[in-house]
Length: 206
Image: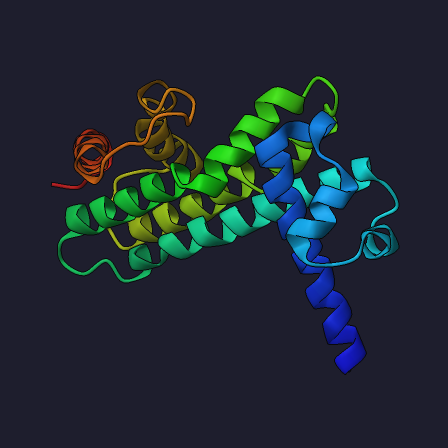
């Protein structure tokens, strides 16, 4: 059991180190020795876990995308028990999602996707499968529950979820200059409040 746990821990360290190095240097400039140093393991250990740099890159991208997804799904938890003030709960969730979308890992993942997609076209499928599609499904599930409880007026939770996320993330790429500009908390709060105001006007019950 200890040996298995140690192997899992090393694999996780390698994937985290790889994502950090790829984000900093890009795929072409990143070396396996750089990744080993970042992960705190020997270079042969990296090859023992991953056959080559390209495989390591794909797994690092997938792991980062899944970590980001888990955090975003956790941010939806207040919608399970929204209380009397649904608007306030929606704003809380919106702010959390905006913070996560603009944190260092999320921005680094998007930059890697933009810069490397021509060389690794399959990473778009990896990121979408582990990210936006599943997040939208989770949001749609929350919207469906709110509709059944009479808190939202929608017969299409998927569309409602899509519009909620579009209102939040639509302006974000331009405002953050594709993740290169840090957005202050006050600006994120305004964006969340404006998005929720529009959403509630469209989908809220009287």
